[in-house]
Image 1 (cartoon, chains in turn blue, yellow):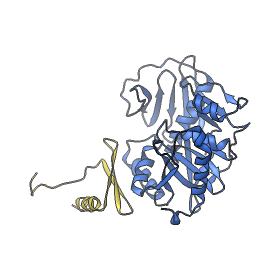
Image 2 (cartoon, one colour; image 1 turned 120 degrees about the vertical axis):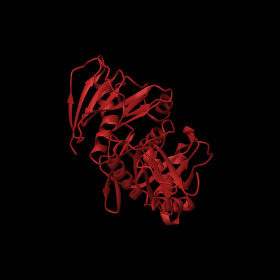
Image 3 (cartoon, helix red, strand yellow; image 1 turned 120 degrees about the horizontal axis):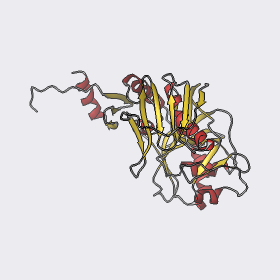
Image 4 (cartoon, one colour; image 1 turned 45 degrees about the horizontal axis):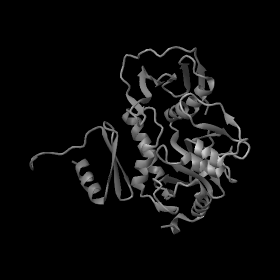
Length: 289
Length: 49
């Protein structure tokens, strides 16, 4: 699917004179993103960074950066935040999740921020597996299930994960202006998968209290709630849009592929965590507890 | 509340059945609820009026 992107001149962000219909808020209470309606179009404001206008049909995005915002920062905002929301307007299913390729199929790791989905994906991607996405899991319906489409070939990591997993000579993108995380590009020791892969499992990551890798099948109702919570969705206050989206997710959770996964968050445990996950993913869901 | 009161489901609330459970989404508050089979049956009766 092709979405047109237009970059406008840098301009200071002026007050919009209306309240957002939705916001993404940081844990400290500050606003990360404000969602506004502009006629039938949408405006996404990232305070002090950029405004993005998404057309009603989701096919055109116009960007006006705030002064002195780097192209790299804009590109990252667009690819990781705006594009998934625009795709949702096209009826695509996009989730906050990382994903990797295994011989059994694609495995997705879904969790709230800070639970290690990027670290886990990077651990696989530097251990002989290819990663499909770091943060925006894009699915399309396929034969007998769903396929995971490749996303942007980079993974963002905090310094401790980067130091533990990534070699010094790994290619890195320039830092972006809103996070101290390093952005590691594929190449070197990190492998990226360029082809869509059938979705085999979705693992919702626990809080790290487990002392061993543990897997528990998630009831469909709980999986549905978790998918809703982790969805990129632009048009969230239109009943018909939400009803259609809710129906699509209800269909998705009919598959027996959703598990809660918890494991100790120690870098030295990652090899056995990976092995346990790969083993679990190869097993027949009908024979798993 | 008394026996003559009638309970209705607000327009901003959607429900979907998955297996023998029901998930309710309240669009106004953005909150989600899961109902077990007993709750799902009560919900069904409410939705039928």
